[in-house]
Image (tube, rainbow over all chains, first blue to last red; front, top):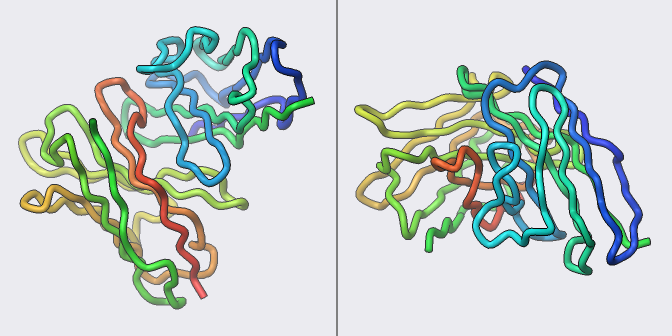
Length: 109
Length: 120
């Protein structure tokens, strides 16, 4: 099973700053990779799929990059509504086992 | 738009069966391009994928190894819904349970609202 490790665990930034969140896989991801945002009391929300494609309705300030074992989510200029927990997720092609990272909490500085 | 509406009890006794249902609107459980999944979230285990059902030429299922011996995910075509049954629960199964669609966007693009289930 591929283990995803996210860093940092907590990121403290101010609105308008740039956020860079990392996700490292224990082995190369050959299947599918995505990023999600979760706010308190809500289900996760899809942000990025196929490592770099923005989901419908996601603002252009969100971008994803990476391949193999290293992936990055970048928020170019933080808005107040961006402060939340972010999760990375991967799925093997076969067997279709999904794993999630432990999350990065993005908090207001 | 596609929506998933979950229902089921919030409290289950140890050793009993946890049962949840997810009703689909705006899509079909028999859709050739989607799979229908259950995921749970707890402070100790984080987000954990449990299993899925989907239809191609026949109904198929895949389950996480951690629950494979105790789980059943089943579709109900006439009601356009799918369900989760988790047998022999323990307090470690206490979590928020989500249903979610895996689509041709290769991601969980639609989620249910979540159901907090306590095993006690």
